[in-house]
Length: 133
Image: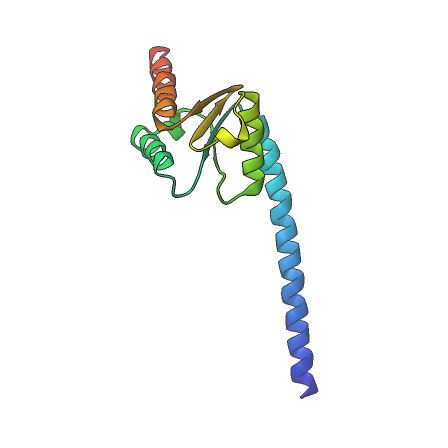
């Protein structure tokens, strides 16, 4: 009986240690990703399940935007750290937190809000890129 209890205790301690170190590594990776995102010149903020965000994402797929233009896609509804980054970027554009929503595109200090404005932004970028070939 003592062996079984000892084995269970060792397993629980092992699982707790594994969970702690796994979470620590995930947090370190998250902090690196957050710093990388904050410095990015082009960031698309979206919410999972947002219909207007899905319109933009469909546009990205249809036009292979991710293959042609480098930018970060950042989910904010399920990630508090990403929400904080979005709020900071929006403030740089003069958007108050109570007027903030997704989808939001941040481009070198300028913000574009809503699926139509964001899609137009990428259309303009893609057309300019095609003209430079």
